[in-house]
Length: 403
Image (cartoon, rainbow, N blue to C red; front, top):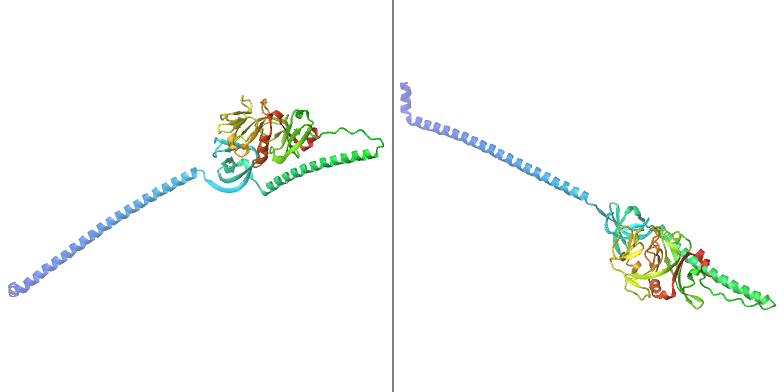
């Protein structure tokens, strides 16, 4: 022990340095350990913070994704709930009498009634409705009442019109041939007779029906058959005992042809066949100079076609609902029109609104139509004092009324 103390005493300086170094080394080790622990704690804390941040970001993204998904689903649901309009372009034809409506709904306002085989321009489709353009107006027709107007349909219509013209020309040629043969036979008999025969009384060519005996003006409308919608129209003026042809043109009648007045019924698209008188005139345009009372069409003018109504087959100034014609909805056809006396007594279910008017795009719902030039001529030519009549017949009936 004494030796150790002596050794420390002799080497005190060295031992002090050595002890100090040990303390410093221990302090350094402790510092490193504290620093390492602190670093690890901070790393763990940062890791926790990053983890929480990532969780928040994931949660935020998930929330945003869910929100966007819900928004997309809501927009899709709205899109599905709204009817989609699909543009389509073709020429269509009505397959029966149909309502031309203001919007695609059965409760929508009716712009007009379209006759069977009315030609329209189809613009597009929305669910069960076609949007169409007819007579410069756009509206809607239920798709079950419309089909495509094909090239075959047009050819059939053109052929029918051509056949009507050929039939009228053939009838005229036959009449001229019969007249020539009659003149020839008369000359032959005169030459062979030894005794001069008394001259036969001259028969004036004209209308012989008692229904036309008090008339000096006749509008003759003939078709090739009772089922044809194509007509030949002639204006005759009587001067003294002579009936002179004033004007000739082609026109249209009901899309289903003719039906004799005694049999004709409402909503059949048939024109009444027989003799009709003229009551008055009306038009979208100003009075062109007719001698009949003339009504300038306004938007509140309707023709009541509700059978049994007190104003059945009459012009009224309010929408009666049910079955009617809104005159202002036909700006082309009703630019000028004459009102006939068909069913003036308002017999139930016989129909009404039988007019003479300007051509539309096809056959009519029962009226007689012709080109605008001839219609303007007609409405300014007919004169009440000459009791004008409209004779509507198939050509096979002509001999009953004319000789």
